[in-house]
Image 1: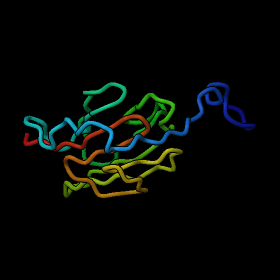
Image 2: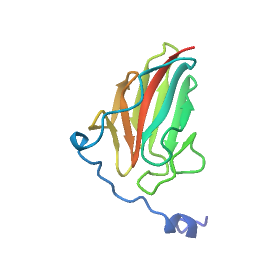
Image 3: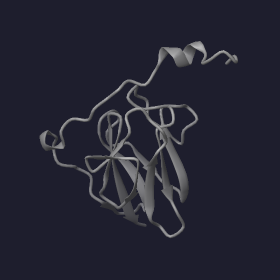
Image 4: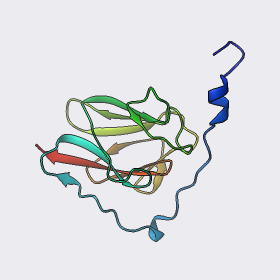
Length: 137
């Protein structure tokens, strides 16, 4: 990349503005909040691209976005390159914070800049409907 701006690859794929559909017209969430055999927290794609895909979350901060350097790569133009940060502190609580994305994050249908999370919460990032689950393992 030169000093005059983004390179050609970045110019070809800007983030597209996206508004989630009304949750009253969507089916009920299908993922359970507690999952046997999983130690700690995980994110499960409930609906959207790659439904069923699961990421185990290590303590610390996990980045979500369309950029190839993100911890959780969400490949869709409605997702910003660096969309959100999900943090699991040593005490085991979970928190999420928008990282200045175009489309924001939605927690249980409400657009928020940041929020504490609990197992069973739905997190919408672009077209991805993610469920935070917690395991007993």
